[in-house]
Image (tube, rainbow, N blue to C red):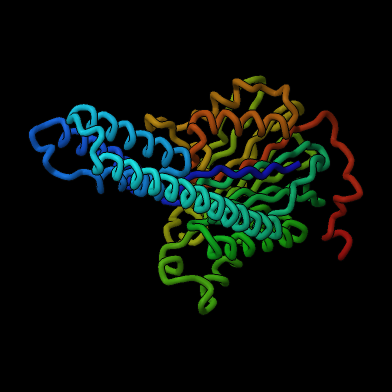
Length: 392
């Protein structure tokens, strides 16, 4: 089972964009404060009518219909207050100001509503296109794969329009259940292209390569070939691009084998205790092979007993911050949920915990793959035919 969820926010991505947006939203109210100060001091000889009418007009740009109505109400309250304070009721200037304020407020509210409706439609269309593009590359993970139950979850960050670079896949082969989770540097079409290359190489290699390291090497070689294709990637990606990748294998034996290339370690939930499966010999991400100075990589085995639960994830999970800047405590969250929920429900609960922590503002895409070791070896379903055995 797979869940794909989207969070929304203003498209000014990044902390600086949010700060600028807040400043722009404050401008109408600062103008109202300035008008109030002028009218209630000896400086009230300055004509402030145009400033009041500007308040709802400026609010319509950044605050939406509700904010525009609030700004118009503030301007009206200031106008009534200053007219009363200056004993200006009955003058033509006061009623002219009210008329101008009413006209501008009405026009601003209508414009803001139309802008919001149009932006929502455009964003929904872009999201549908983005989800369709990503679904072409990342197919749903089967709910049952031999000796394990599985579920996956993809969360897009608040960019609204960008397709992320997270990847995942799980395939049943004659060597066991093989899985991959990775994170490509960057977003957009460049990231989708790299995700497609890595996942495609993985889907083919898992059926033919007996060694897990060779599967990783096939994925790495495919990405290196793609990078040198003229025009496939920009110069920055060609020089600095990399992909963190984790490949796991669950054979019939009660173990899990891992090859980790710079990716966050998976969590093993055993008897209520979440333990990160740290590699004994850390390896650089794919694309940074020149930094490897140790012995040739090899797979590492860890106990994975019936009843255990294994969570593979991308760094968007552990790097998610709350408003105070605190990172999401994934082991604590996993231990708090235990082993009772089935994989889809477990990931849904984890998703809600993640959104509570960040208050719905994900700064990076998130991908998670969860598998449960079942009692007994299990039998492959008709949908899980080994392509390698069929072709060989």
